[in-house]
Image 1 (cartoon, rainbow, N blue to C red):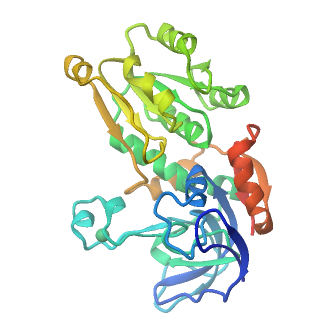
Image 2 (image 1 turned 60 degrees about the vertical axis):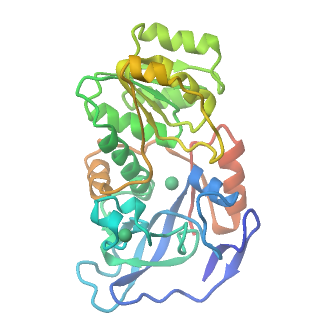
Image 3 (image 1 turned 120 degrees about the vertical axis):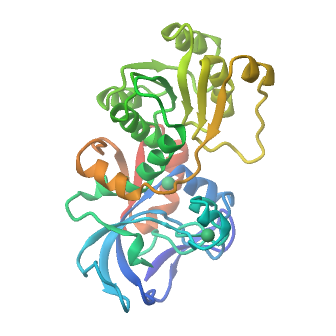
Length: 339
Ligand SMILES: [Zn+2]
Ligand SMILES: [Zn+2]
């Protein structure tokens, strides 16, 4: 089969590899669509713990083409969305219901072969049938399950006044989850008009166009919409320039959720006095724990929609171009590779 391979960061090539064989309990999947996301860009740069040789791709939808021994509940020809995280279930963190911190976590596309390939294998138990969904919708199952984890962590009060920074694929998924998850008012701030337009279509009550690096004018605009501050500010940009303003935009007793991924070495000055005096909470959401089945349900009921998401499509041989597009092309919302 053909598959993208990295032997170290940055350099990648289209390799000719043996078709992977499903072990007992696993299935072989012919990959139909794999989403390209910001995490793939970090992996490309060698961040986020890649294990080499690596075939990335963790937002995978494909067709089951072979069942390993002992597989029940799936049949060949079925289309599935793959939950790429396989925790051991036995270590201390798994037993504390924190599978994302599993000591021996296998993550397809990060520490094990992923979906930028013609075929991959995965445990049948991590494959969720999505025959009734179109591919562009099904490919959102993985990022949506992460957004659901974000809300699990946040536990927002019904009616909360929420500010969401960022309207990329993640921001627009969060927009829809917050909208149906009980936000009383949702304000989305981003720098690109077409993304804000999508945000309004997905249920944002207010949108504010701010600079990529929010300046005093941008912040004043956000403050004007909520003079006493927001109950919740979510950063879905990963930019510390944006995050630096989040604490100041919180209402007393408010919560900031760090959802976007900043650089590993970046630091943010925050006033402990302000956290103390105003009883603020700062929390983070990494990957997911239990939410993949809920993600598929929200796609199935149309609570989360995919129309307008996929703006760019590539074959396996266009993978390098796909990474460049995600980084540099502001007209790109979601790119998918269709092997
Ligand atoms: Zn992703
Ligand atoms: Zn574990």
